[in-house]
Image (tube, rainbow, N blue to C red):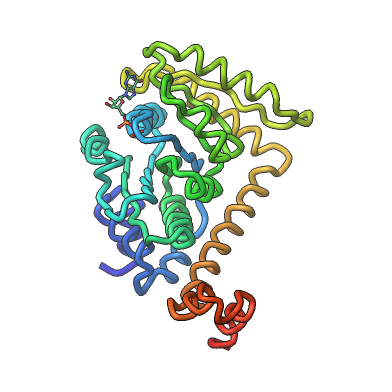
Length: 306
Ligand code: GDP
């Protein structure tokens, strides 16, 4: 099948065709640039889902898929685990989720292989988001394990970022440390059936009351869910819709899209620069031993490829 036929098949809901196209984008295979031209456009709501392992991301994403499917929307999920060198989604549990939605052509779930490099990761994920959007998915969910900087980068690709917390995991403090709190548009306290959920909600609200906001600025809502029982999902979907509406006002969405594109380009440039300007072990050792200084060493790296 040629690219054009694959694209048509994918648009019609053929998941194997979609998978082949994502693989082309993910590995930057020949045809990736042509593919990007073929599937321009689209208007998906891009939702980032982040949080520490075990808070219930996979379970929640599965419940969200169900809610959006009820509205007749096509949903794509990209599961990104920057800490794992493996693809296949063992950690993010998409096999389990796949089972929930295995027979539904309106759902596509995929793990994104890590490239062992943050720039590469954000660039690859960004390209995959763009592809799914262009293939006509209405919602694209990007799920990341909470590991600080990587999730900040991945969140820059999303329109609306959900930060998941669960009672009794000390998540509040972790999130503050990682600076992740600032990137969240909606807080979700999952496992609301567990003791301590009220306390987690209270802590979050107390923390947010300390943040000064300009009038008209978005105020992050705190949603509570029991993902394993699909409870609280409708309210969460409504909160995501509200944020999307807020973004749509006063050109914020266009702004956000521009920022997203910039983040993606930057990631690609970073990755390319790292490839081009290599810091050799020998040079590092020379600096470590005091044989040369850092500035001179840097100049040598830059001059080498000039
Ligand atoms: P992830 O690592 O963040 O993707 O978390 P998972 O979705 O794999 O969930 C981790 C565990 O928590 C699983 O055993 C889920 O069944 C369970 N879980 C998820 N949501 C809830 C919830 O709302 N309440 C309870 N009690 N357990 C949940």
